[in-house]
Image 1: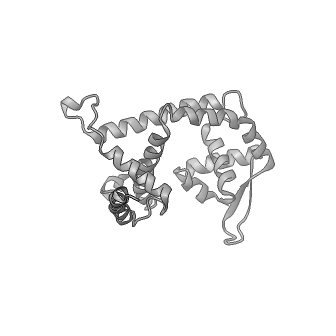
Image 2 (image 1 turned 90 degrees about the vertical axis):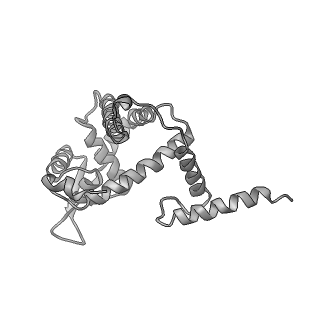
Image 3 (image 1 turned 135 degrees about the horizontal axis):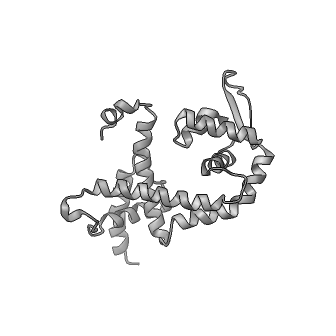
Length: 213
């Protein structure tokens, strides 16, 4: 048996374990493959972008692309609920969250969807009025209300899920499987960074000062 390939892989595994101390990847073969893909992505040649020759920064490009992707996704979501009982994409996103993760407090649901409290409460109140979610006293804290998906909410969600899935598939476009995995890793890293800032509940007038890299 030839061990040349094994000798080449072992240092990579050691590097993976060293760089993965924060648990960004699962500690198994799948995690190792994801890490390798991310490393390959990092070796790509620097891309071109509009305004680069005039000094436009990569940070500006990333920010703009994320904003544009959000708008594209919203347009697909709007099409997915066209003619349905849903008024906004936030309504079905809240229902999907409850269906996926089970009952939770109002604030847990609002924070999971990265909304400010007034906006989140308005969405929840609409869903309660529709009979798609209900609320009960929390067993852990009687001052809090726990909300959960009702059978009516589950039904209206199921009726629209085929179109919602189609919309989510469109968002990822023509990316290959490996590209999707690499993008998930990058977006998770970016999301973790911003989540730490979001959880601090910094006022808008102090946010930029309190959100240093």
